[in-house]
Image 1: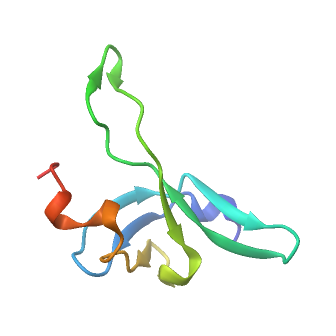
Image 2: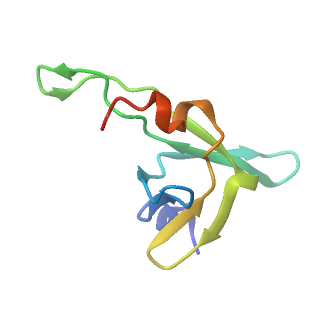
Length: 91
């Protein structure tokens, strides 16, 4: 599988089934030749003139990636503060 193929897959949290969106970027450790994590686009905070305004990206460490499938990437991010359901005002 190529990196460009990963960007086409949706990322889903296995704890609550929430769709977190597609991968925006990969964080690589070039000296060790390993993946440190994936970067996901965050939710829009307000509406701008041409759609949503800037968002903060979320970093998911590579050890939180549980499975890469044909259609989705499953991650376990329940205990990360930015994905805490109690702090989620998008619902």
